[in-house]
Image (cartoon, rainbow, N blue to C red; front, side, top):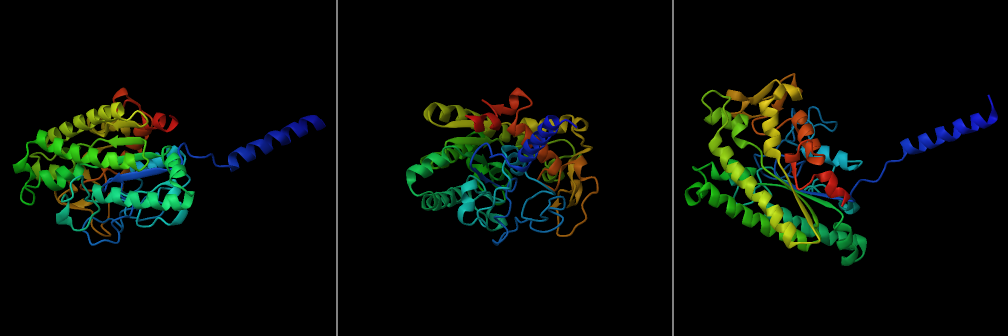
Length: 363
């Protein structure tokens, strides 16, 4: 073989090996997550709470097994972390140590709500307010690591902040009148306003502590969850529109808050992720996404596998990827993959407003 050709082949192979062997930097330096059981990845493991999932069959399809994720596999945050280019998942606040904080922290806690009292019947949980305090503690750690407040502020301005709360304020507060008074105090419209006022207060604290790129995740169709179908649906299939209507009111207000804050803070960007309509797509046309079951949990007990959620070591369904819901309340790995991907890169104009997470990362 001609020596020049052989040398050229060697150079090409060396370039390819170098390219494949080196991980590209993530699109953003760090990712901070505030939320509830939809994205909790272990913060409730060591607190006294009924809202835990650090046991099989949770995590049955996750490489690390049960971690505290309320899924058989990934959460939407895990999917988005992959797409952002992180080489590992963002650690929970309860486990993060030292310089790990520089890549971000997951503060989410199962049963948490915007309101402090939300979820109290389930025991311990870390409310949105407490999650924000934990973030403030993280910022103090980062100042020590990075050397001063100015460097920390510059670093944090490039990070993405995901907020996904509100579901439990309906599921484990407003629509639980035997435990909470909120439904007797407020109409659905008034309750959403109260929630959004408290939500906005916490966002302003995050802004004052360096956050500049925000993702507001709307709440899904709680009235279509196996638990609510088991309790409220005559045929076990028809979603409860009383609950879903309240969810839509909150989401409309959250989208309006995005406009308000984008106008108020010229050096920050706020986007809204339309999770509600993404789930509507899955329920309306399940076969297009590979699903055969839209109304029951893959793992659970009773009607719709939704009266009692997935119990320790309970055998789940075999065809897990064909179920939208993993348990009585939470979507499974397959649905989370779809929602996460559409949150990151919109497939429909309605998926994100005014643009998606990928664009937010590039600004």
